Length: 139
Image (tube, rainbow, N blue to C red):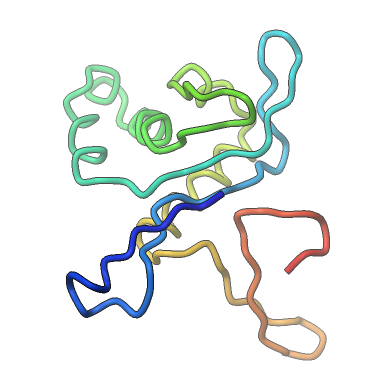
C-alpha cells in the first residue's frame, strides 16, 4: 500500500527508496453519515506548501488550533472507501483518532517512519512496533 520513490540513483545519498505514503489504521474509526466505519487509510508526506498555505486560511487566523485540521485534511489521502478526505471529515473524527493522526503526522514528517522504540516494563527488552496499526498482536 505504501509507495516509494527511489532517489538513490540521483543523489547517491539514500540507501533505499524514500517512502512517501504510509498506511494506517485508526484506533476507533470514522463513522460516515450512512453509518459506515472507515478505519484504514493512507497519509502522504507533507510538503512545505502543505504547511505554509493553511497559515493564510481565515479559519486558522481566527483559531490557531484549526491548523491541525487543515494539515491532516491535506495529507490524509484515503480513509476507508473515502478518496476525498476534507476538513469536515477530520473535524468529525473521535478525539482518539485525531490524536493518533497528529502523532502519525509528526512521526512520518519529522522522523521519516512510523516505528516506535519501546521497552518492556517487566524485562527491559527493547523492541520496535509500527504505530500505523495492524492486526492486534502484530509487531
